[in-house]
Amino acid sequence: MNVMMKSTNAGPDMVVLEDVSFAYDGSHADIRDVSLTIPQGEWVTLAGANGCGKTTLTRLLNGLLRANSGRIAIGGLELGRGTLAEIRQKVGVVFQNPDNQFIGSTVEEDMAFGLEGRCLDREEMQGRIQYYASRLGISQLLHRHPHELSGGQKQRAAIAAILAMEPELIILDEASSMLDEKARQQWLSLLQEMHGEGRYTLLSITHDAEEVAASQRVVVMREGTLAADVTPNELFRDEGLLHLCRMLPPFRIQLEMEMEKQGILPVDRDFAGSGMTGSEVEWIWPLYFGK
Ligand SMILES: Nc1ncnc2c1ncn2[C@@H]1O[C@H](COP(=O)(O)OP(=O)(O)OP(=O)(O)O)[C@@H](O)[C@H]1O
Image (tube, rainbow, N blue to C red; front, side, top):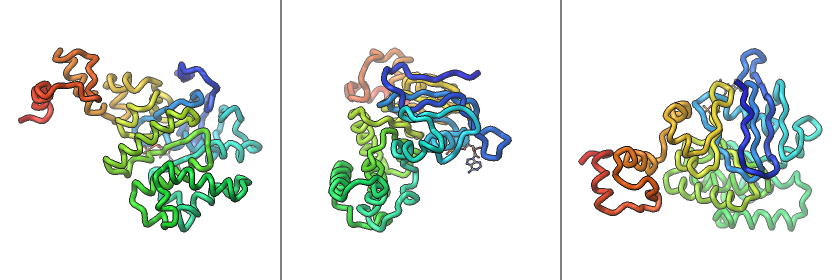
């Protein structure tokens, strides 16, 4: 079944795919009849098992791959030879391994490199570099070699370079998978901040349940097709979809669901904000972790 997936949010469409198909080898379709609309400003998670086509779909969106059939429009522009350069200016991609993304021999050079093709004067370029480096908390790293940075610092430098180009659509391809727990929390806050500004549309491929929970919508892929279009809460309460995504709900939601099942506390209790009393936590803890 080919379902046209569209969010209920109003707003101009940032991404439109209509019946898009693509095959790497020209025979077996790796993307099949995908139709998807993402309004401007929305934060969407693209989920699914390994090899289901998530990265391939994002490569189609910035013209790295050309669809065999169907229609793709980004920010109102039809993707095609004549619009490719303009569309690439609208789309920024952050990859899992930022090492593959660095070109400059310092963080500053790397940020400047992306801006050089944009016909900006020196002052504007410098202004953007300073502004985005400061926003990402990496001003003190501008003169360091990117390969000398920690994983979290590299990820910040990579996203600063992307943000400096002021894209409208940001694709995050497992961008947080190499971060430790603390860096991951900072990363999540950064995404929430960016989303709060309303100027970016975020399309994130991630297996991190907290990151999924923070997004507005989850599009689930299966074998090159779109299998579901749900809210994070709907995903976390659907065992079949969770299995399809090879994902578990965040711990606090697992706990909440278990307590709901056992009728222990009101279902609207805010566990994320630690609404539980000490004795309630003490009671529920052994259910999960034993004594
Ligand atoms: N460069 C390539 N050449 C040929 N086939 C490819 C290429 N890249 C991916 N594929 C195939 O296309 C299909 C979709 O791969 P893709 O990388 O898009 O999946 P994914 O959902 O992003 O996977 P993962 O979660 O493992 O990153 C897979 O069957 C994969 O083997």
